Length: 446
Image 1 (cartoon, rainbow, N blue to C red):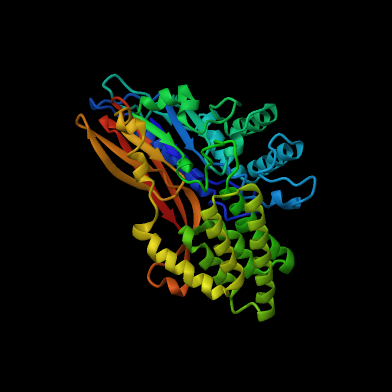
Image 2: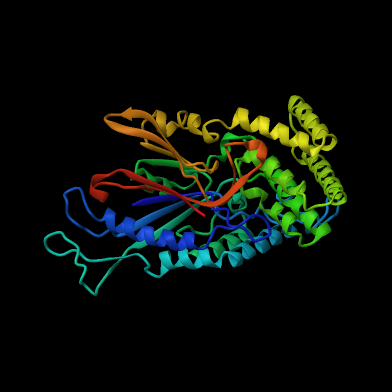
């Protein structure tokens, strides 16, 4: 049995709202049920599973969304960010520090996952002679659980080479009980032949999906290079709430700005932020000061963009136009622009990577029945083709994430509803699960 999960975005507590710890306890219970059900075979008999394989398909830990990067200033000798020299001691120490804090801040997740991988949490009753389970047996069969970590665009730092990064990865491996060794966590299956061979048994080809956008992946430099997505996530989404908090302290309205990374859909981010900033509980002088902080944040971001992420002449022209709009127009104009973009570009619930699945070699050459991506957080299943009487399908593995979601009835009202999302995909091989091929589960709680 193969289970695929992506986009947990476990953070160090400085940005965003974490997922409720109960999600990991729920997953342990569901994994136990999945293992039992998968032990029923196509011939109608019960034969306990020996092994479960879990694939973490990128953006599991999120060292990018951390205000701990912001303790050094642009232009100083010790300036350290994801886009500076990854071999520098300051860079290595920063990744080590943030990773350690992520593991510390998510002890509930670590305990649950470690219990699954190392403490025989998944136990099944033995089978008796007639192919039935023996529920009265005091002896239980432990199912081995292997978890494999692949990286995406928020945890690509664990793809970097070098002894220092091997040590950082080793801490992650030991904390969760992963099946990886401490060499760079793979970004694609071509880097991990053994993992690719394992997924072949389930007729699955999987990747995170970040490669399909120049915002999140640099085709020329590869996955060991930072992208504009890092700069925006850190210097705008993380930095703006950080600067506001330094100026205003523990204002409950402004604390909500830290949840900006939890807003869905993505195009609703500006609407969420502006709804907090223009709250009636803030005076006009406070709103004016926040606007000053916003303008400074945007100016600093575009300075960084020009230096570290130069673009084509056309793209730079568009960037400069956007920069002009962001610092010269009132917040109400931002809201109207964001609402316009939401209505025109967020059709049918979101953006899909489906078209790229149709171009995958594994699909075109009929090597895989199932193409799986993560990255965009929206669970999706779509038929691709019929392969010799076998279906080929595309899946997006969704997310485990706390959301503030824009109400669809009247977006102009800027109403957001908070809930937690949880999605996983399950694939079977041979005669498992009475001969079924896959199951998916996605749910929400509030």
